[in-house]
Length: 149
Image 1 (cartoon, rainbow, N blue to C red):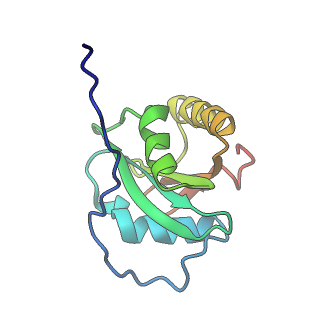
Image 2: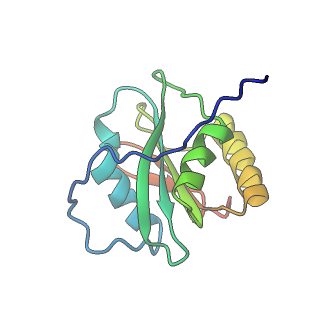
């Protein structure tokens, strides 16, 4: 007789807070910047935090997840951890976001490589990367606005 473990996968809601957003729909990088500031408080983080927002086919927000919290200048982000959350939400697309505690939102070579890797994984899974926003002190960097997505 063979013993087989049976599992059940379940998505658990951490909180159901109300945020001061005009709309749940994302229409561009400025919307993602505002959403990231409200949900993840990036400007006051002492270490790098990587998060995603999941969206439906009409770009309405369906969920928000902190994926990784790292050190002063890096955090480990693996496609498996990003897309696990997106799949559980039945996301049509996702927006990536993280902060640079240094205050300079210019992407590093690691940021560029990671974004490309996540974009390729998303293509395989059928989940589009809407944008990747990097938060700095006074402004942000949008991969979409710069033609990198």
